[in-house]
Image 1 (cartoon, helix red, strand yellow):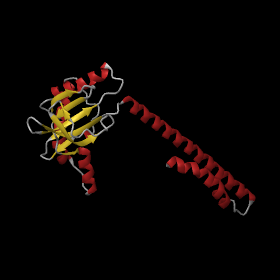
Image 2 (cartoon, helix red, strand yellow):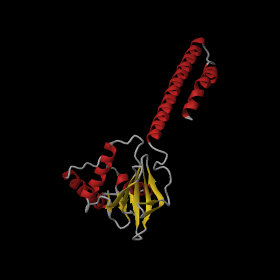
Image 3 (cartoon, rainbow, N blue to C red):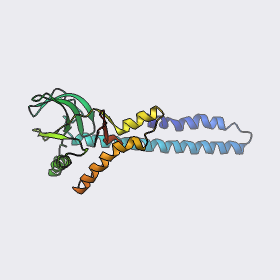
Image 4 (cartoon, rainbow, N blue to C red):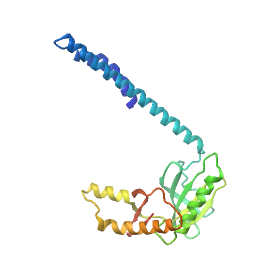
Amino acid sequence: EIAATLGMAPQYADAKWTRGLGRSPSEKDECGARRAADRCARLLTAVSVRCASLRSAASAALRRMNSQFPSDSPLRDRSQEIVGDRYRLLSLLDRGGQAAVYRAVDLRMGDEVAVKVLVPPKKVDASWRERMLREVHALTVLSGTAAVRVYHQVWGDDGTLFLIMELLHGANLETCLDKAKEHGQQLGFADLRPILEPVVSTLETAHAAGILHRDLKPGNIFVQNDGSVRL
């Protein structure tokens, strides 16, 4: 929409701005106004072309991403599917470009869990599976820290990895900060200390084991309703 609007702007500038600016007392002023309007028109044309180029690049990137992942990507709603003959996916909690998280129920124990679905790209190589195994191993090594608990893993016939995890109740730190800001408040050190201390301790354990988080941000720090923290 921006590109389309800017694409009309040069014609608008040439047809209307020049006429308006051209009503000057002297021919010199009129020529200067016309040159200014012309420069503005050229600038808007350049911006329009650039926006169209960016839009084209974004569309190409989206097509490449879609071509790498099968039609049964995490974006497809998998609600009511049963994973590993044990876990029924109930509802979608969150999703990204390559993964989705569902609220699920353990049909054997009756407990509610979270299931993270990781769908491989069409061109699967050994490195992708190795990365997934490293992620599972890292969470296992960090058992007993503030890292989210992983109970089980299931591999689908198509290479999809299902991580059976604890179901969290609460909100991530980014949401907590936004809500405080909406009410004109700001979380101080006394508020953040009990949240960040478990995170720091978990990162220390991870670093000692040679594990690097690589995506530490408020959106990945979860504060549960009981006050406990998960990373």
